[in-house]
Length: 102
Image (cartoon, rainbow, N blue to C red):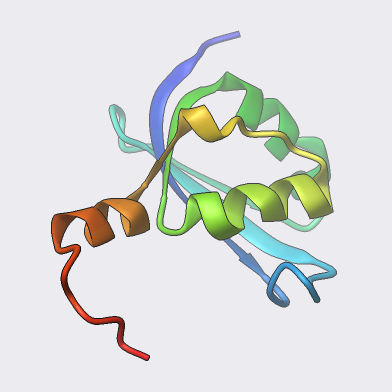
């Protein structure tokens, strides 16, 4: 099994964690090769779990608060939090004094 060092990924679903029933798609771009991996429909259940096991590090925007729990809750795909770089967290750390937009 060939491992993938780093992917930039996003998941789209039909709701927030307290109401979600379905993941529409997951897209992940291999940072090193530029290859884009797309999963939707049946491939979310058959191919995505195999793909996820090959990835060493994930970059998500709000991955810690949404994408990782979503994938566990709906698809039973377990991505360890320690394997996630969350750009939302990094953004907040980069300008910690900025006011929230709400």
